[in-house]
Length: 410
Image (cartoon, rainbow, N blue to C red; front, side, top):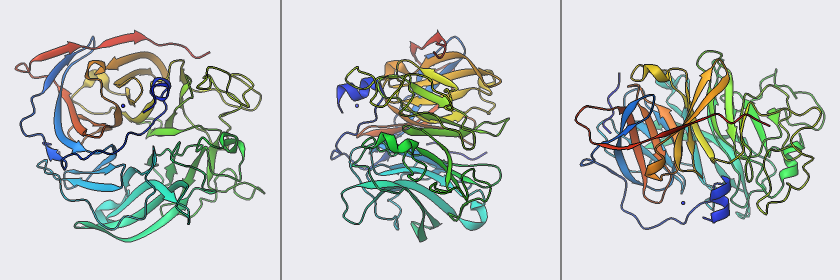
């Protein structure tokens, strides 16, 4: 076990849209050495939350290093290393050119499945076009050597580049065979592109670790289709994780005003956006181009939220610190500023419990640490790294969290 001691337009927040705030002049990230854990209680667990690091500027993704500590991305374009003792090191050098505007910037981070031998780090980010005025989701990898990434190369590019700073996604997940899944957004300016197989907006893609295309991808050899596509008709996918038993990829995506989705994307399937959706446009009218909530040949969400939480990072819990939570799915919520726990029976959602609501913090990412605790990133100008662990008897209780019955999909 490794040791780690370590809110935008009102309508957008209300609907789950991930609108950025301007970067402020805040102090450099620092360990919260004098932080006091706050105790929380729910019908299922007593736990405490400790602030480990403060001063992160819109942190987006994190990955635990095998020797201890972690890597954390900040959306303005910085990759930070947080040491095992909680110290925040200087930004890692060598990153590619990043488009930073609105929701766009440096996004997720993942380690190579063979990181112990190859030291490769993968980053998803918004890559500018040659004029620098629009961007597309991209993936780069580089070899971590000390305080820098070396031999950096971009292995995937979303084309065409259409985003002016909205709906870029993105999460990175390796499956057990070593394929890399990349979630993306529809760039919002061209939602209909999510239905066009020759464009990479609104697509879940699957590539090999060096960027090559797997021969068994569903659209390999199909005229007019990008061979990288795994599934399509997605809006803005900001959460992804492998199920610990089935080993299938689960993803989340933002709906417009309502209609956030949890999906288990299957190869070659069409998930409908913008033709079908369980949400409305931000003006309260039907989404342009939508025919309703269902259409032939289009998949229904595995689970849908009529009111958008603004889903972001997600993690299945498999640790021993909370045996009552084993197999549950945790999701960060941006619009409702909370942590969501989904109690699952097999793949079925049987309860939706809302945690940390009273903290009022936008949870950007959720990861299970090597110690079995949950680690959360708070998305803010003065962002935080939090650790959620079982409560100690000496910890002062702060509040009670709420649970609610699950709302079935329409």
